[in-house]
Amino acid sequence: METAVSENLARIRAGIAEAARQSGRDPASITLVAVSKNQSPERIDSALAAGQRVFGENKVQEATEHWGARKPDLPDLRLHLIGPLQTNKVRAAHALFDVIETLDRPSLAEALGAQERRTGRKLSHLIQVNTGEEPQKHGILPSDLPSFLEVCRKDAGLDVRGLMCVPPIEEPPALHFAFLAELARRHGLKELSMGMSADYGKAIPLGATFVRVGTGIFGARRENQP
Ligand SMILES: *Cc1c(COP(=O)(O)O)cnc(C)c1O
Image: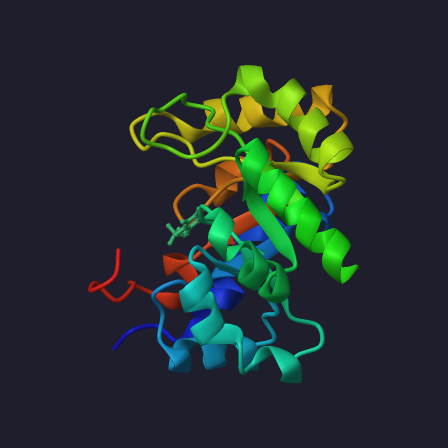
């Protein structure tokens, strides 16, 4: 029998607290983002029943299926978009999410800024950095960060709080976490979204303020979806 979501959540929360303690950090400075992509409604309800309120999704349409009906009843729910955002889905994403972690190009920043001005609702944003400079991966190149930050803030008027990365699978993640932390420090950015089920314990000593954990909480994802 698979381990219950509530037990997994308790174990991950304890792991976060332990990693924080060992690195002399306040556990309250780290937010667990439960990644509910490709998970069943039952598992999502179990996480909610266990008190989890911050969730991450990587697709706007699936996020709407998961959260559209639940959100009105959950005033303290916080939804993070952690996957690439197409410009034609900005309106739907802006209506559903609280934090966009994947700013990665000027046209997206402009579209989000325009939607915030139209509606008067400001979100929090993180810039995704392609720390490994992988051609197939989303995120801006580290060398483009200063100019992109300027576009996001000055031109688009976005509230950029920090940076996010997904390290290359074949490299030690800690190198990328340390690099992302250095970039954030250089630009005075407070939030760092880094670390997943396999490596959140390595991201916390390096300054992660958001850890994005999916399978570690919910178990294996349904396979018919990527
Ligand atoms: C799926 C996903 C995660 C969660 O990964 P797990 O290994 O299941 O914890 C974290 N971040 C991003 C960007 C993802 O797409």
